Length: 100
Image (cartoon, rainbow, N blue to C red; front, side):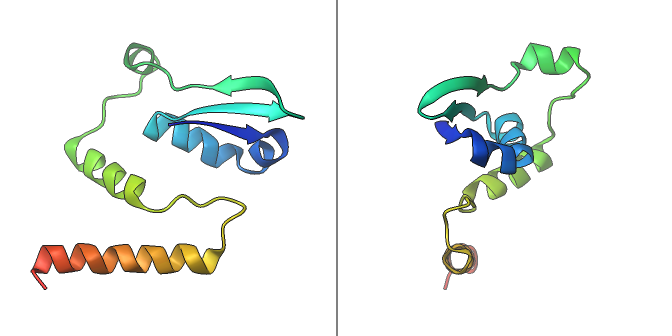
């Protein structure tokens, strides 16, 4: 997913942005006053292996899929609504898994 973020928000969420780029493959463009300054892009698979990052296991892939299915937490979102949507999603998954 490609998105644009203001430099102030990027500064506050830098660690989270790096995680999203590395694990999800997102592309983030950082802007100041509407002008693009920088782009954070994931390394391709050959560069990851060259840097010593092993490919992920099937268990890690399952965990990443579950993580990616959670709602995105942003600075403009209400924490109460985020928790409600997470609980709602867990209830739906439980109903599907256990046939309720």
